[in-house]
Length: 308
Image (cartoon, rainbow, N blue to C red; front, side, top):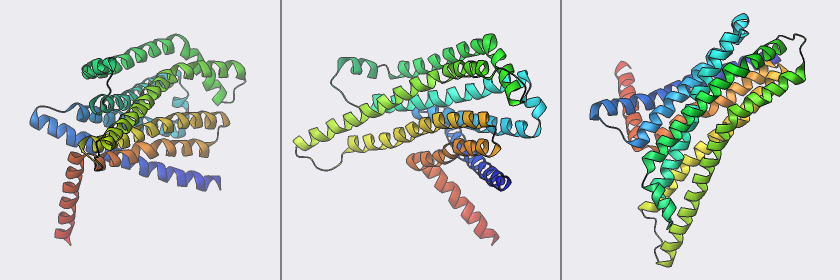
């Protein structure tokens, strides 16, 4: 029964991996082509492009790591492999979450309106705020790498011995594991709080705007209302992604401790689910990407019709 479940979840992982690669690759292709053609790119398209690139890195790193652990266990247990894998995984994940936070902050500062001098001052420096998020992520990543080099090698050695069922103090290993992942997830939790705050402030801005319209006797949606709603859809989906990510990391940790292959593959299914589905939602919500996607579909239909 477990072998059938394993095969079933592996097939789902492969399908999700292909969908995620195609969806994110499509976003990168369209935005990059428009960038080279027009010699300029909007801020939101630039962030979406790097978000798609980071997602593909997460997908490929995860599938490569899972395959090596399955078919090349000796290599996967080596200290150098775990260290290199953690660098690539952590870097791509941090970039993905940083882009997610940048989009949330961008929509808040671009669309929301508050009669507050501090908010207005920050709103005038939107590019500096986005740059600060990126630079802060890079600095935290560098500090995390220094920590990994100094301390985490000892933890990786202990955890590898534990995975190999070697006699080793479990509590000592788990304490190092908790310290390691507390530092790893620190910036992710911070970015989640920033994205959640941006989302709540945007809701409050929409509520204030609708209240002003009601007092003025206006009952139809205007451009500002539609912009608020579109931004909230995008930001809500990104918040769901961060929740998915944190819960899935916890699930992978649990499955690793239990050493259950089916639980591990199911964890990968959950991670791949959002990374593969959400790019297509972004395509549907973005007018330029939606037009390009429809154009490609028409070309494919005409091409297949010509053969038939």
